[in-house]
Length: 423
Picture 1: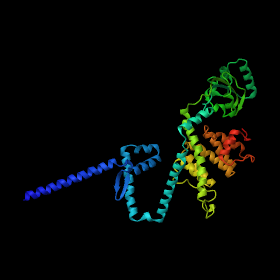
Picture 2 (picture 1 turned 120 degrees about the horizontal axis):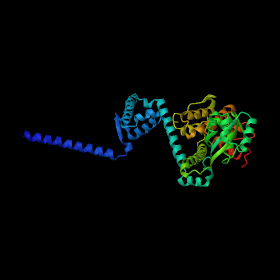
Picture 3 (picture 1 turned 30 degrees about the vertical axis):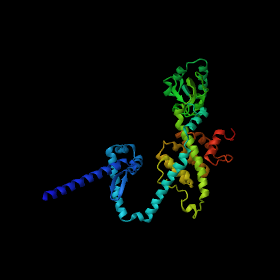
Picture 4 (picture 1 turned 90 degrees about the vertical axis):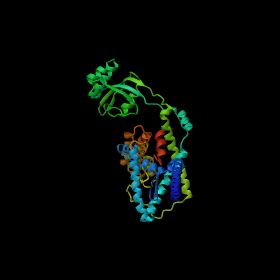
């Protein structure tokens, strides 16, 4: 009888273990078949960390790290360390929930504010950016219709002789025109000791790229040498370094850039224009639908002349640029644009931000001295920017009361058509 009982008990235990193993296998199978993003990585009490949450946090946090520090997390061990840090936070979070702090008035407000910012970011992405994205066909069509805009720079191989005064320069130019040896005269007479050693050779110069210091930073010199044909002598050009005579040894004419090499540039340009247009249209429509009523004076919210910090949600250059555009306070906008340049000096938005600083100082604050500083910085720091011509136009015309501009587009149009506005 005892043996029978033992056997029954043992069978029950084994059967129970088998059921448990089967249930565990099914649970494991269920986890493997569910959406990977929703897979639970860790449970801390009633709080879960899903794979989706981990990936979002990991990308966001490591994206803000310095490259040297970021590499420590780009391996299995580093990712596990990051997960452990999230677990530690959730342990503390359990404590906060136990105290009922999720119902605290300030926490509720901050949570709503965070939700609002995330909604705005997602709305901007879905309602504006996604709908403004040009198709491959549109990008190609723009390229084919504007082939003249996609020419590479002219390149010239130049020799120069720099003389101390105009009298000497005229005498040397006369000798050169009579057949004098340019390299020999450069070694004998040029006061530019660096190039004189090589017979005045300046090497290959590229139009639109900063020229050597030995040219004296002269725009007139640059425009002169890039107009010369192969073997042609320049007239005398006076710069801060002396009186220059140049000769072009070789000349490479502009070549059309391939579609693939400018594809991204065209796409960014079309996208930027469409985003601005759709943003204005959508904003105007929403503002009509949801009227705005200020219950207090603006001055009681933002102290005059004080540049507020960028919103916490604005981390990327695009978000900072958008935050500046959304601001109604001129000084605040300048502060955000400056922060963008500081954080992302090499981004495509940096030159735009630098130009906008000059535009605001000129057209909104009428501080022409600071406007000049900002606009000159556009030309010096971002010589390849499409806004360089607009910056030059602003520098020449911002004090001219007959030249009225309401928007940046007005400036671009006037910069293209000339001061009078006629094509």
